[in-house]
Length: 396
Image 1 (tube, one colour):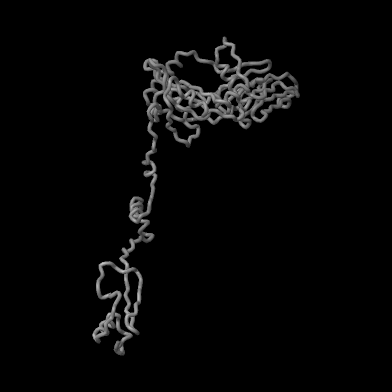
Image 2 (cartoon, one colour):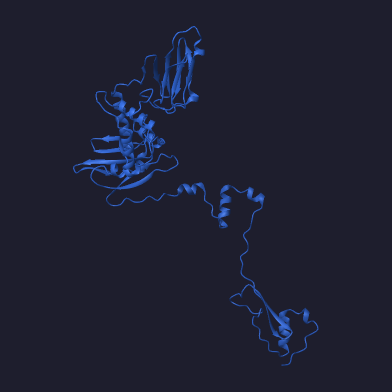
């Protein structure tokens, strides 16, 4: 094949000019990619050089169809944007942003009630844990009394002082004519460990409709000194039941009495509202009962050399000391133990030694003063509750 002599200005020629020069001299050139022709599909985004004639390369360059970059903002322009404009700016560029409004609009998925089931609610004692909707099987009687037993079963050893305090509290509220013996510590420990103990506390009783709402709690939760359930106590107060101390998780359910007997029916989250019909009716009923009842005096009493009284948060004990010419302040010593005892000594003789006290006290808030020949001791309760005695009697 005859190859023409390249022109003197070949280095300055473009690839297209070199191709035209060769073809004008009868040279057949097989071009793999010809940039002078438009292709429907753009070639890959690479630069290629393919030799077609000895000493002459034909270069084909492909450019990908890349969209222009999105305009960006400088610092001054970004500072000038409102929060809504800045949010729109980020979302237009594919940035996923979740606002507090987005989170609040998310709906919690609640499981549907199945056939033969009823709805009841769990009120956790932890304030940060939400109320849970639960389902139970419908059967004769109140199913929750059996269903919740395994939930409350706990093999943890109970605190003996808590057991003595709570049993004293409950027995003191019973009728004085009744002769009741407190269950032993071992009996209560066995009951709590083996199967759990469920107590249904009535919140509302509607005899006309036969519908009752109850709070289901661990009957031995107080003996274990579980944390107080503020949510459950608030619900009780809304029903007119004030001053209750609910310990641990609680459950709310409804029962319906009918011709076929008692059975469980649905109770939903919306009914926790104090403005609910059942709650308002219960509040009125308990208020009427409290007005009709005779007021009960706060526990107080006296002993050989002392007398005592109490308020919601304090216990006051007035101790009489033997007479002497020495100043009483120099003769007396008062000790609170570790917040569970009270010892009053005068001239080295113990006038009072109570251990353990009915309930824990806060030593930092306790004090004593001298009033003539008596010592006035003020004990600050660690928990606002009524004391039924000053000290606990050991149960064997």
